[in-house]
Length: 130
Image 1 (tube, one colour):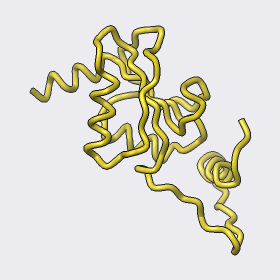
Image 2 (cartoon, one colour; image 1 turned 90 degrees about the vertical axis):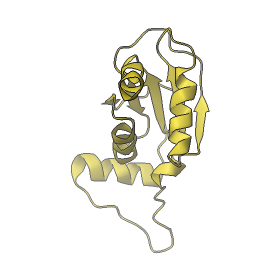
Image 3 (cartoon, one colour; image 1 turned 45 degrees about the horizontal axis):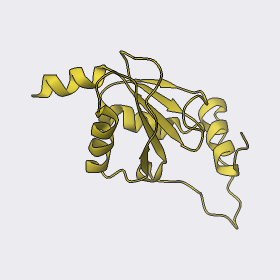
């Protein structure tokens, strides 16, 4: 994983309390949460859950979303995998979904900023709202 200057700055700020060092000839590189690249993966036996979560995020102004192949295991709790250190965006997504655990690993779709593995807790949330 080769990190950009912005990714390095984000990690240094979040984990080491170091302020970002922005050079005068660059912009801040901050991406709105809606610009974050999100991969969504179904981690249940219930078909269509990844699409449901994608639609929910789209309804809430997220647009850089794509679906990936179902996860090989069933999960009770949704995993929100922070691929590149952007815990702020991941926390915003977690708060919006109202479910899930954050994980700071590179085990999801490596092309994404965040991978969401949708667990059965999404079903419980949707069913409780009906």
